[in-house]
Each structure stands twice: as C-alpha cells, then as structure tokens.
Amino acid sequence: MKQADVINALAALAQPHRLKAFRALVVAGRDGLTPGAIAGELDIPAATLSFHLKELMHAGLITQERSGRNLIYRAQYACMNEVLAYLTDNCCQGQACLDEAASNCNC
Image (cartoon, one colour):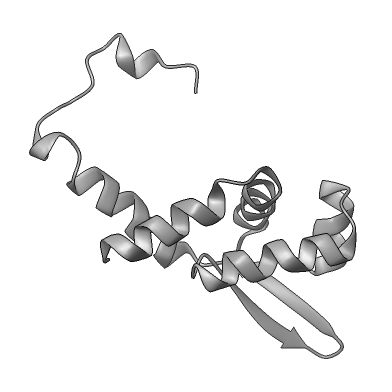
C-alpha cells in the first residue's frame, strides 16, 4: 500500500461519524448494512450519512452494492488490513517499540 493511500484512509477515519460508521460496518461483517440501518444506529440524518459513506468509499475502506432496491455497504477488510500492515511494517524500523507499560494504554 502506498503512503498516499494510507493517508487517505486515516484521514477518512479521522472524523467521528465516519469512524462510527466504519466500526458499525466492521461489526456487521460480510452481511453489511443499509444506509437506513447505519443512520438509525448512529442517529444522524441520511444526507449527512451519505456524505460520510462517500468519503469512506473514496478512501477504499468500504464498498457499496445494490441488492434489489437497497444499497448494502460493507467494510473492505483487505484495505483495513493493508493500512494496519503498513503502520506495523513501518513502526520502529521493525524493532519492538512498545514496552509492557505502553501496551497497557487506555486507547
């Protein structure tokens, strides 16, 4: 994964509604969710949600598929894993960078 792709993915997730929507889609798994289900879970207007889903799609973090009259959004696990792999591969030049105290972070 290229640095620019990682930056786009992290930028897309650096907004509370988008992060919550992405997390909801990750939890939903392969079944995905409709925009109505996501909007209901996040309690945000459909127009606002549409904007945020578009940003996540642009970053490659989610996909959209039409199923009859519904749109189904799904987390793109391959992209998520590539972002995590990029961050891990480029962390601390391959050395263990977290001591035991740091691994107990309340993040």
